[in-house]
Image (cartoon, rainbow, N blue to C red):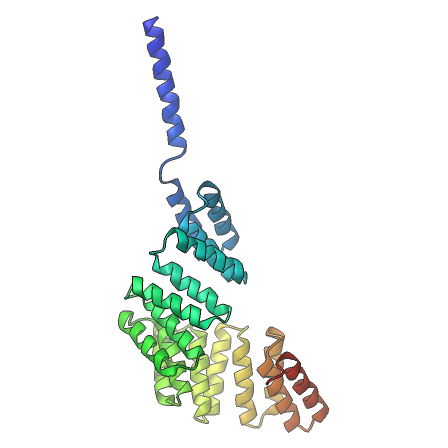
Length: 299
């Protein structure tokens, strides 16, 4: 009898051990790692499925909430993104990346002051956070606070000297201030670090255009489009450069291409109206000016 009882007890222990092995204690960590690989490779649906699976096990898992919010922002679901990242912060208020990405999505809502507060909170938690410095600079630039923006970009570059995007943004800010040589130098530095950065070619083209170096500007725009063929802003900018050369037909083609990519592109409608006016096509010009005003009555 005793022997049978002992056997029974040993059998029970074995079964329990097997059960524990099915769900190891770090399963969520390994799932997050797998999801991040999918996320970083652009397989958003697979990543989303894993984040949601984790949240079914632990509804307050901060990393999954945050990363699910990042995916929501990537697919244009900004309100959902804000809610998810806020919930992540409620469950882990000490993670600077959460505040940085909350700033990014709030900025997309046009709430620039709130975005600035988020980036500042991220930097309070992590003073050497170069990406948050860069994002803070871009938000100041959007508000027209160019000196503050430049200070932020320069700080980002102190923290991360090979930060191509920060050099590009610094160049854009210098261009806005009329410091065109500095702007071109920054864009060139960005392209040394990251040769496939179309935004740097675009910004360098804008600086050349402001120097009336239209051929150089057009070459920059063409290079940007080789890298990113659906870059509507570059088509619009290249159109203005062609127009400056008196090539209104080429300009019209560029503006129309910009509008194919971005049908609500107000500036392209307005520039198209100008190009048709230069060609003496006044009815066409009026129709594009009217379309401009439909989209933005105060233009």
